[in-house]
Image 1: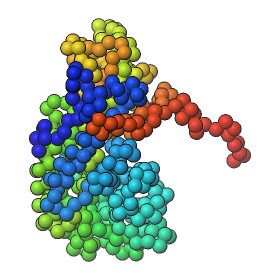
Image 2 (image 1 turned 180 degrees about the horizontal axis):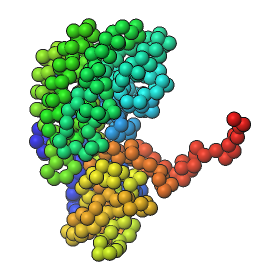
Image 3 (image 1 turned 30 degrees about the vertical axis):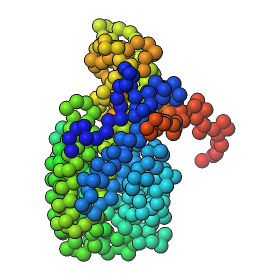
Image 4 (image 1 turned 135 degrees about the horizontal axis):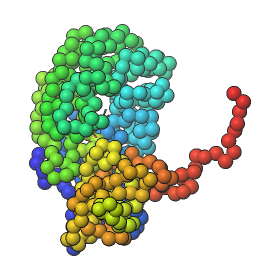
Length: 427
Ligand SMILES: *Cc1c(COP(=O)(O)O)cnc(C)c1O
C-alpha cells in the first residue's frame, strides 16, 4: 500500500489547518492548549485497510492499547471489530470500561504481578502471553486457586536484528528482556503441558516498533514456524500465531508507509502453511497519524545566535522527541509563508525539553498556534505531571463534529492523592 491511499484528515483550507471539517483554531479555543486532537476518519480508514489486507486469513486485530488508551478511541475501534492487547491491570480495566469483553482481550507484559495475573484470569481473557518459566509457574498456580484452566501463549524472543530502529523500540533481538529465549521454548512448552491449569494455544512475538520493512516479520515468522513445529511435536494444541505490532507510520517525508498488501500475503501464506489463526497487535499504526498536538506560542527569543519558539507544550506533554530522538512534523495552524530556523521548546526547566531542534519551520508569532503532527501514539499516554503541569485535554473529531473526550487536568487533580492527615504508624 503506497502513501496517499490512507486518509490524511489534516489539511489546510482557507489558509488554516483543519482536522476533517473542524478548524484547529475552533478546537484550541474550545478546549484550550495544549490539546491532543484525534481524527475518527483516520482510525476507521486504517482499520479497514488492515482488515482488507488480512481478509483472506483467519485473523483478529488486537489494538495495542498502550499506544493510546483514550476511551473514545477504544470505543471506536471496538465498534469496528477490533480486540485489544493490554500490558497491565490498568490497561485491562480501561479496556473493560470501554466495553471490551474478555474474549476480545489478550494480555502481555514482561513483569505481570500476581494481582494482574489473577485479574486477567478472572476476566477470562482470550490469551495470556507468558514471558518466562517463572511466570508460567505463577499463572498455573493462580489459575489453580481460581479453579480455571487458562489459555496461554508463549511470547518468544525470535532473536532477529532490526535495521534502523531506535534502540529503545527494538524488542526481539538476542539478549532483550522480552519473551522466552528461542532455545528454551520447547522445554518450557513441555513444562506447560504437564501443568493442569494452563493450555498452551499460541506462540507470540513482537520484534519491535516502527518496522521499516517486512524483513523482521519474515525472519521472525520463519523462526516462529520452526518453533511451532517443535512445540506441536511435543503435543501442544497450538491455534494462534501472534506476530505482535510494529507496522510503521510516516512521521516525516521519506519515512516508509507500511506495505499492508505485502504484510497480508506474508502472514496469510504462513497461516495457510500452519493452519493457524493470526493475531496482530498494531498500536502506532492506528493511533499515530490520527493525532496532532496543538500548542500556542508563548514567547519568541534569540540566544547565542539561536532562535527559540517557546510554546505552552513541553516534554511532559510529548516526550517522544527527547526520549526517542523522534522527529515530528511541525506546522503553523495559520502559516504566513515566512520561514525560520528555530528550536521549538516547552516551558519545562530542562534543556532536554524540546519538541523540535534546529528546525526549518513556519515562522510563528506570540499567540499563534502550532500543530505537532503524528502525535496520537505514545504521546498523551506518556504525559506526566512534571513541573506540576496538569495533563492536556483530548479531543475527538468526527466529520464536522468534535468533543472534548478527556478533560484537561486541574490543579486539584495534581493534589488529589496527597493526604492532608497522613496516618503515621509505629513499625
Ligand atoms: C508496544 C507493543 C505493541 C504495539 O507496537 P506498535 O509498534 O505500536 O505497533 C504490540 N505488542 C506488544 C507486545 C507491544 O509491547
